[in-house]
Length: 105
Image 1 (cartoon, rainbow, N blue to C red):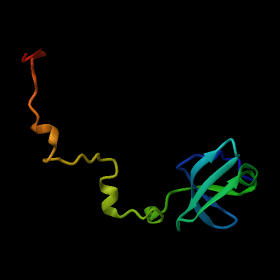
Image 2 (cartoon, rainbow, N blue to C red):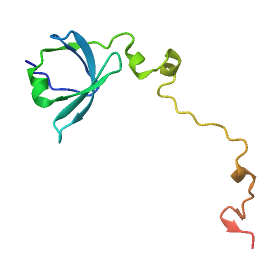
Image 3 (cartoon, helix red, strand yellow):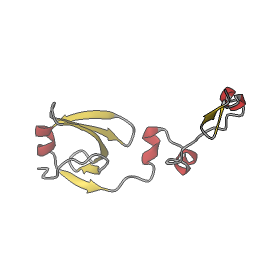
Image 4 (cartoon, rainbow, N blue to C red):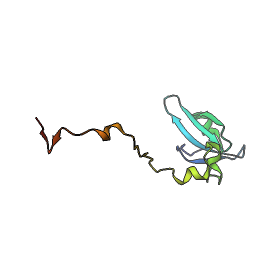
């Protein structure tokens, strides 16, 4: 029986079914745990079912990004913020009417 508390982002192995999955969401009000298998299939378990499962902690598989359709190139800049240079910004052509906080009038 599962004595582990489900943790979002943690990987588990269902010892009975021999399947590895990640917990992707927990809805405490509905008492549901959303999981995603390595092949990308998403499923929901209720808390009672979770407690009855024989679960082991698991390491993420080497190709875990495949279910999210992420390429190796995507993972290189995962946390980078992309701000495009907008050379045609219409606001950059406007002249300011104030200099040092004083109006031209």
